[in-house]
Image 1: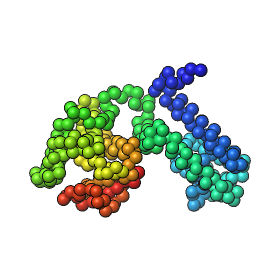
Image 2 (image 1 turned 120 degrees about the horizontal axis):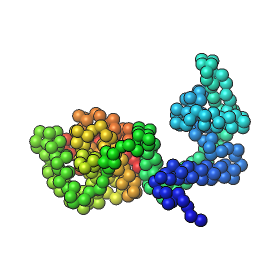
Image 3 (image 1 turned 30 degrees about the horizontal axis):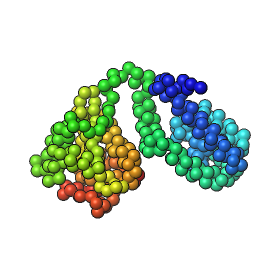
Image 4 (image 1 turned 90 degrees about the vertical axis):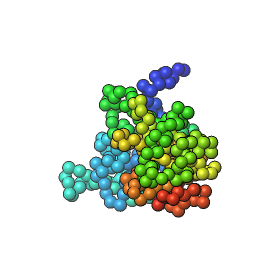
Length: 316
């Protein structure tokens, strides 16, 4: 039987996501059924919000936390109430809303569900990794991009105005120094460290020949950003020389470059991604923390630069 969705390619994107979602929910229902638990996969998000809440929630609060429509949340709650898993009462502070919380039966069910959720999560991790090791972050990025600029707006956006992250090729070598060189010279008052002199002029030898990677950001026809992913050992990488052209710093390029580093680390079964920075870059630190990096002491395999004042690490 011909699968017409395969023929439609990107045009069937939403349909493919829906088909996958329906299959996951069907299989989830079978898992609950096999465990003799009266629960549906479609209830999970709403139930989980209530299970982790310390106080009753309004329907709007539940909807905002999972970004489901108001009507979808109401329909799920109706089914949960039918199974006596939630109670829905008038809100004494707002007659227009109601307060929802788990019943005693609903709270007791959580103890049975959590071991299943752990097994299901581990299985999904293995499944999603078949598509890509960084699938969760890819979905997060898609979600963010669609919320930030809906498809109906993007359809009128010129194709060249999308930021692309591309791998190193010989023709891009010169941009590494052109982008990062002047910035570092300014930071170091015109005196580069020995490591900088070599890496800026020979990024291919400094990084690629040692099992690392180089990425560039392209906007329209311009190369506007770069980053190096340095291999420290078989399980560890460090990203360095992250730089974005000052005229293009409100396009999320820094985030996109770091996310590409994270994806490449996961593709290579790395366990940690490190970075070195100075205290003069508080805005960059906010981004690093947002992406999951934490302050740590430098590992023994890292060559710490003289200017380094802060070392951070992301566990993968």
